[in-house]
Length: 212
Image (cartoon, rainbow, N blue to C red; front, side, top):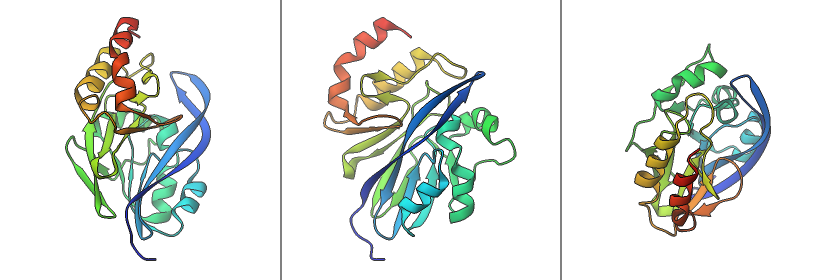
């Protein structure tokens, strides 16, 4: 296949999120960034078959995990086995990863400031702990977007009421790492619809006052 300009594809998969003894039905966004020749997958959620089909034979350079909650990484080993692509995760999330995949470690580490090249563009890793210790966002300035996993959603920050999470930390991550991005940056989230940095920024004082 011929290469071209990098584009963003969205696939929605369904499964369960499990933590602290609870289980919830969820739908996850799987983001694919690339061109007709190569791609990276952001969060291999639930369905390796569907993700492989969405790749359409493109060479998969990496499976990038925004964090290690099971609903974001449960299909990662199967997808890696089929494609040969490495699974990348911030090391602070290894305790969470091992809850889902105790026998299989990620292949490489994500670090703040690291750049992942694909299809002539770059994704810059922003370490944004709070929802999980090793949570990261991926900023693609050429594409005018940031992939936020479960750190920032349309309407507020990700949940911090369960193990390994911390509300003041997620607020600091959003304030320092995300709200400093251009206001028209499109926020592509781990669940639900996209938003923009400019749409979310005015609500920061309300989030802090709510304090959860």
